[in-house]
Amino acid sequence: MRKIKIVAMIVSACFIVIIIGIRIMHVVASENESERFPVPGDVVRVNDTNIHVYSDGQGEKTIVFMSGGGTQAPTIDFKPLWSLLSDDYRIAVVEKPGYGWSEGSDSPRTVEQMVTEMREALRLSGHTPPYVLAPHSMSGLEALYFASVYPDEVKAIVGLDPAVPKSYEQLQVPSSVMIAGSGALSEFGGLRILPSFVKEADIFSTDYLSTKNTEAYKSFIHRGTMTKNMREEIERVHENAAVVSDHIPRETPMLFFASNGQGTGIDAWRETLNEFLHEINDSTIIEINRSHYIHVYEPEQIAEEMKRFLHRLDEES
Image 1 (cartoon, rainbow, N blue to C red):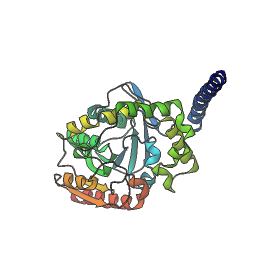
Image 2: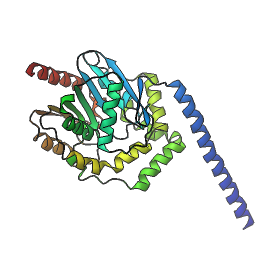
Image 3: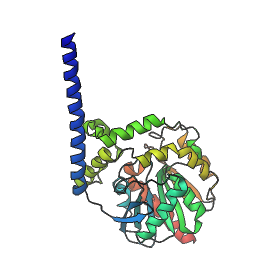
Image 4: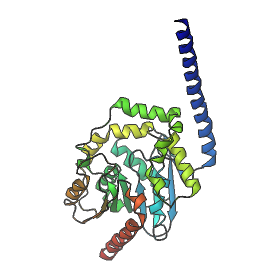
């Protein structure tokens, strides 16, 4: 019995040492990574936080890229696509609070609040409307609300496999405990000892990233997965979808690129997007047989179709 207690104490002590070691490693590594990967764009003060806006390119139109829920480093995630458009358009990637190089915020993650923050961040970083909004996944809700409430500020919406209000009718939101647990694992540093989690990121399948881009993205996975703002967005998604269902901008031209639904966790994903676009006066859908992060897998096709769509709008205006 005494030997069992001694063994148990040794095992417990070793476990505590390992946990402390992981935490120290995470803190030190995070500090080093912050220095290795400085903010690439403009940082603007909006309400209670600092928001990062990456800008590039030239042209009369500004395409605003809006990341899906939980995308750790939007500026890098969208690079395969925005790098193909920056010769003809001004591009902006607004990283919401808790994403990428932006700080977290204590403001509620309502769709109204997030759109207000984005408009102000764009203004403070030197961009002027009307914009072409390019939302991925959950930010489709924000794009629709933006265009509905501020129609003069939106030229068109180009959805990169975007969500629409009905998309979330069948989505079962994970429990608060599960969501909080995943965030705690990241904040503590646990993802640094789970290399398989990092390898699964879609962005690493592209050739458009530099070695430094790849290293930076891995850093954000380690220290920026399921931040408190990301977690609250997930918890509020049904509430936000209900708000947006009353704010459908039927007069805004829309081009949607629809994936095969893999990675969304939602049945009839593509069918829901097709049904939604029937309500829009000027709409087109292009189906791509790829999983949810289509802008990573097929940036060339998407870039060409975007240019064709925006050129048509210019000719018709």
